[in-house]
Image (cartoon, rainbow, N blue to C red):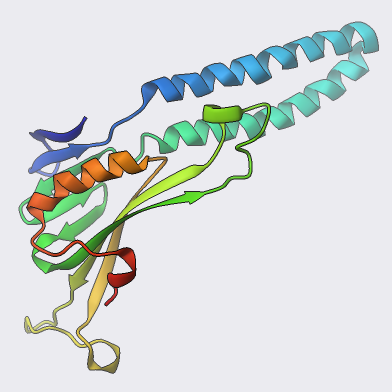
Length: 200
């Protein structure tokens, strides 16, 4: 998907729609059943046959607790892959959910993609893409701050005051972030800078 034109709920238009990898989402669900659901069922049946009802209950408790952990991991990875799915242009503002960016105040902006190791990327149970690293893509904006008289407000040490607003997308690959950047560039009359330069 990427760049999109359409009506928005805020009266503007949708300029970007997040690309969702539905195949990866389905793959995680399939892997959950294949690598956890089926072996768990076999273990429960074996416990009942060879160990009786008491052993069955013990295995059931263990399987249930571990199932909550693994199932929750898969659920949140899939949920995150669909979060913050549109950006709308409403007048001079970018709108994503409850977050708004006044484009007339943008002095500079940056894009970054960070990767957080969940410590489960090598799990034999999950493997890739069921478990693994969480990639967070971010677009940050430095916005000029003005006082009630419309004059530029002063920050610490007399420097011009500014706010930083960040839009973020968990589980969004870097190439998707590059396409988002290309979509936003025509609408932002400010330089694109490195993340370390955003705060001056």
